[in-house]
Image (cartoon, rainbow, N blue to C red; front, side, top):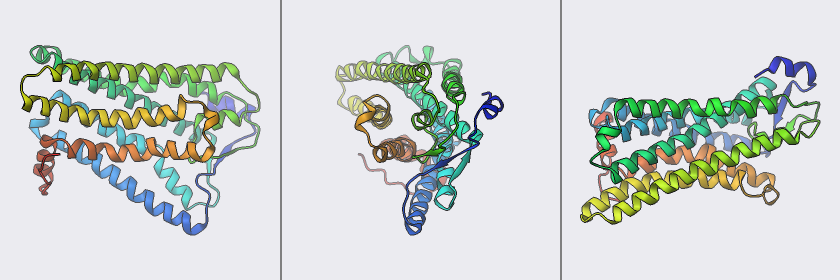
Length: 317
């Protein structure tokens, strides 16, 4: 990202993140609330990563991918929440030009990676349930390692182009972003000139990514559900549905919120609604994911109890 070249043509050296304007008392309340949410998110996802790392029974493709997904969630939520917490206690609420676009790049790159990991995990469940006899031969260590590397790197490669294009737009003021993070839509609105090509490339990228990944996940689970319904064993059906229900819940949380934000018409979303929706998929969803996977998965609950020597209720859900 050629930030040095951008600084010579722009008069804007920093941006002001308005966040959630309110009284100082409410800012402290927000700080306390989101500090708790952030801490719980880190603890929950770290617990899953540790359980997968230390419990040998979880050294299978499904759980290794889940461990990577939880680690990804830790990185994802850390791109925005610490800065948001600092702004609750700050009077200036400023972020430098470079840091703003760095946050933009890492947040959306990791968001893309999350979508790709949901696709990879759906593919893994498809093979395990629809092709059980061929699963060990197909899902080798080399394959799931390659898929994990692909999931981590693809977003960083793909999102480089939109970030570079938007960072090259001329910014000459104002520099106030009515958001709690450096979101691309308000950034493009602050540009001195309207670049239709950049807006088109960004919108096309979002549409292709979200529709493509969502359709892949949808088709995978449609095939899984058909295969499960054909199972003769009721116990097998329950186990398969329980596993898939966890994945589907995460898929709905992720794709549901970003679809509302980036696919449906923007004119119907006031600024405050945009903030709330962004807050949902950037903060609340990473908090819910470890709860969804651990509470609905008997093997994960057993591993967490063994690793951390704590009693976790083992009743069926």
